[in-house]
Image (cartoon, rainbow, N blue to C red):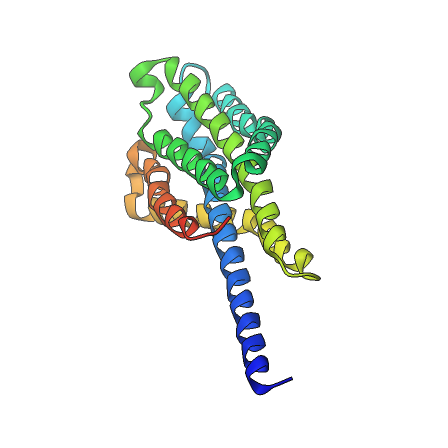
Length: 219
């Protein structure tokens, strides 16, 4: 083999390697952000129960808040079915964008949602609807990201590449806890009044980053 051919081969290998790393990074980062949005509710369930389920005693309010958290898990399989089918029909990239925007907007809206004291029973109802939208988005995102990475992985490395997607749930949970702790520190006594909204509103920044990165992906 000539030196020129070896050089071309090395260039192609390097390019393929860079593309694979970009796919893994973009898919994993977006999924981390989605898990952040999803777990944020769980990290703040005690505060949310007081804000949105104040019409009952504290114990019952907390149970209702946990049931609303569970609602997001219940609809996840349906999200996987719906967005998995859409991914096959219109492509993974566009499905990625739909799921990340749906999750980001739903989370941001939780940060803006009036409490039970302001709009009564409508507050928990809207909250549960937003949780279900988050579950649908995450169900589509998680399976879609693993499929997208597997489709772009070189032969013999599909398991290794898709394993990065499996780590995103833990990273998303860690990120949500760090943001909550930071907001508690900076807002102090006001955290349960209005500071709890900041982590939800911060999701719009993560949405912008994730959307920008995923727009550069190829189908």
